[in-house]
Amino acid sequence: MSPSPSLIDRIESIPRRELYFFALYRVLVASLIAALLFSPLSMLVGEANHPRLADIVSISYLAVSLGLLLWGRNERWLDTIVFWSVASDILAATLLTHALPGASAGISMSLLFNIAAAAMLLPLARGMLIAVLASAATVVEFGWRALEGDGTARTVAELAMFITSYLALAYISHQIGHRARRNQQLADQRGAEVANLFEINELIIRRMRTGVLVVDGEGRMTLANEAASALLGDGGSDLAGGRVGLASVAPELGRRLQRWRNGWAEDELPLQLAPDQPEIQPRFARLLADSDLTLVFLDDSTVVSRRAESLTLSTLGRFSASLAHEIRNPLAAINYATQLLEESTDIGDADRRLLQIIHQQCQRTNGIVESVLGLARRERANPENLELSSFVRRFVLEYRQSLSIETDSLEVIINQSSVTALMDPRHLHQILTSLVHNALKYGRIAEEPARVRLRVATAERSAVIDVMDRGPGIPDAVAAQLFRPFYTTSEHGTGLGLYIAKELCRANQAQLDYISVPAGGACFRVIMAAPQAILAG
Image 1 (cartoon, one colour):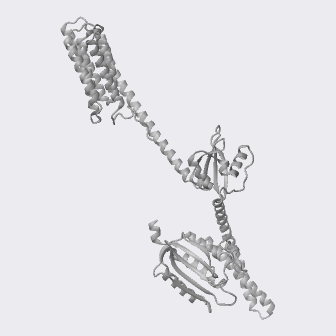
Image 2: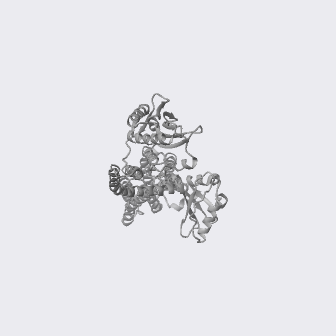
Image 3: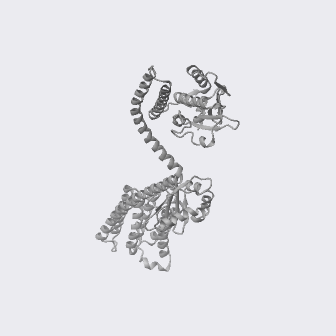
């Protein structure tokens, strides 16, 4: 809500309630003069030198004052109305002063208010012009009275005092008004900035992913942002109706807050406020030193865990890359020495079998090293608009030519003629290679040939590639750990293939999921955003 306008703040815009009261003041003065002249109290203004002139001027001034009261609020003619209305005040005051010499001092004094008000409302030039006109009128009236030989004429000292007062008061009033307007504008500007900052802060707090609660000394929640309301579940919706006790909505959180207020050590274990909500880690802080209000921050522990895991993996990746470089040289030497020993004729069959084991483990270790290096130096994704049907067909053809799959089968299923997606082609080729390799290796039953299918389709606004096999499937306990780094169920595996594939998908804003197949087998699904979906979003 904007602040209410004032006379000083809105001098250049209008209409003004204060200007209306100024017109009322003029009517009051005109009415008072007319009442004194046409009532038994006329002796209070002294003997009139020109009774008829006094009567005509008082009645005319009252009529003009009433007209200005009705018409003087027209915002289109503000400066003009103020200037000519005060000019009429000066004219009426000059004529009445000449007609009523006994009231000349009082009339001249009342004119000071009109000049001061005009100087505050008008620009400096017009305000000073009003003061000059009043001074000139006073001089003219003084000369007029001197020409008539009136013995009650003002003294030159009195004349000079009124002229000085008019000019000084006009200038001082304008400066006061100008400074007041400037201060008011500055105050309104600061007020608008404070209001904007308040709205910005409120929006930031409301949209924060961290839940924020404000709890008073009696344990009642006075404020909760959107994240806190969501974490509180159904209890957070009750805040719209007024203050709600924290203990009634989240008893455990209320207990921890009370323990914190009593100076006890905080419980570091996360807690769950609602059945369908993630676990949170509460933090408490006093709002003000002398206030009983407490800020309660509700951090999603899963987000914190993911951040910690990301930092750990980042550090581990850099360390592993350095370690991998140190391993490659001695590993190559061991592998080369093994090959030389295998060529010797003095090696028996039993020892030759041991050499084969050494060679196999060297290859496995080298695979781990290559995977770690590939993960550490992975470049930024460069997504392109890919036509997935033709891309998958080329991939299957290249895979068949580069790797002998013998009795195993690798086929493509295209549900639509054209499916497009936004994906880095190098990354997608690496992802499919890893998934197909795992499917051909583990997606078989006993000694039967492996049957792997690559299906290209669309799901809602996304493009999908499914890599399916007819193997024994993956147990639920293993499926939960599939994408963890270095997790493998094979003694010859590295445990990094699926993890790297998922990280490559994440770099392309895609998703890699394991889909359980009730009829048997396994399905890994790559979900990619379609270009038109991104543009629509």
